[in-house]
Image (cartoon, rainbow, N blue to C red):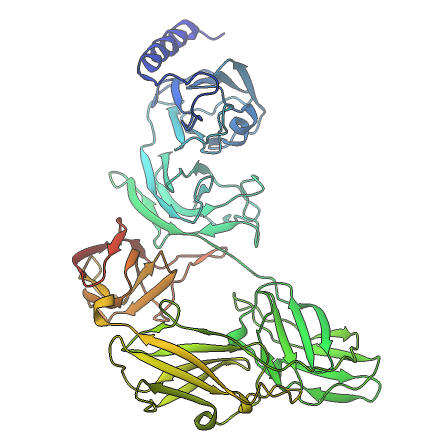
Amino acid sequence: MKINKYIKSLLLFMALIFFYKCANQLPPPGGEIDLIPPEVVAFYPPNETTNYEENYIEIEFSEYVDKRSVREAFFISPALEGNIDFNWSGTTVEIEFEDTLKKDITYTITFGTDIKDLNNGNNMASAFSLVFSTGDEIDKGIISGRVYDPQPLGILIFAYVDDSTYNPITTKPKYVSQVGTKGDFKLRGLADGIYKIAAVRDDFRDQLYNIGDDHFGVPHKEIVLKDSQNVVSNLLIKTTVEDTLKPSVTNVSMTDNNHFLIEFSEFIDSSKISTNNFYIFDSTSSNKIEIDFLFKGSANKRQLFLSVLDSIQAGENYYLISSEIPDNHHNLSEKQENQIVFNAEKDTLIPKVKNIVTPLASGVIGYKKPEMIINFDDAIRPFELNNTIWFKDKNDILIPVYLERIDDAAFQIISEKKLSEREEYFLEINLENIIDAAGNIAGDSINLKTIKSNSSLDYSGISGKILTNLEQFNFVLTARNLDKQIDYDKILSPNEVEYSLEELLPGKYVIEIFEDRNKNGKYDYGSIYPYELSELFSVYPDTLNLRARWPITDVFIRIEN
């Protein structure tokens, strides 16, 4: 018998009167679009009720919500074995538990941010938790923090009791919550103990970690709740995806009898492969044909071009042999054979300068670090720099440059000296020396490109101090230009707390910092299974708007264990 029915109804009624007096009225039909998220406005039992003996709870939402989304975003910790029934009346839902609640247990019921209203599909802005106990005391443990992810809404926070049974692939967490629109989360009603915490984008909604499908994140430290030290706040987690699949070649096509277009199963790290990763095998004659050139050219993100100096002769039994091709997660492909359909068409197209990319605005390079990238549309045979590419000032005086190869169709041109500020320069390319694999010559003229240098007045900067409670540390600081999607990284000296980032382009910036424990210069996300902690990081709370000639000083960045 529900002995507290009248008390419960009175509490709900009073809460609803208060809410409707304070709430904004909905617009009439045809008015403004509803952008107001739903929220919990009344609930039973009251939060932190002790000695609770009922087998149900009741929740009132501020508006009509999608019932299915409530079911999917309902979490009870610790979990119950029996069925859970949702009985609706308007905007109120009574949730009844088939399984009897255990004695002397603190239960936390969370309504996650996946709950949507019916009017416009608005998600709840933050999760709501209801905590009560079937005993005399409430577990007071709290873990709160923020998840950093491009789209944090809906990510779940899993809390596992640290014991030998931990396996997020097969075992559900003891406690669950869900992050809000800004990535904030809070786990309440936790008992004393040691916890493993993980943020998981649980696409299958099974409260299990699915390798390769679910994004995950783990914090930088072990979580211990004990006695009066039972509140952990400002726990920061950054998400990534675990890729354990090896890349593979999915298709090979001959575009002519000198070129091959290779397509891969995923993005590959082209900076770590060469022609040595491939060769052509003629099974009829048992001949091995070496690859001479590798380049990106006009290929899409999952493709590369290969080319050979000697055109392939007609045949029916050619295979591309490839091996040890790395993806962006360091997985290496296995040795693979892909049959090639022969293409007898000859390459008669002359190679062309595809574009000249400068790091600043179009045709503008930095006067202190002058560099640009020249991209051809085909692989280019080796050439003598001094007879092929010249960089000159307005007085026709040569400026010494050197080349760094990106691939066989892309080269970075770097000046050996600083340029004058805001001056015109000229890049000249002798097309007679630009020859592709098939022997086609780019032309008999000079390709001329006007390049301008910028000025010290075009830059800005950020300087300040790092506030930390660490005794020994190696920090890496990153200023990310949101407008141009450029990262400026600075590796600080051991235990260095004062920093200065100079020659930053104007724009809006976010500042991140991490403690490089293994000194590899890269942020390490850790692992969810086996459980390995991530590196400590912090994000400056404000976006900085840098203007040319107006560096920002006294930017204090806090990073604490």
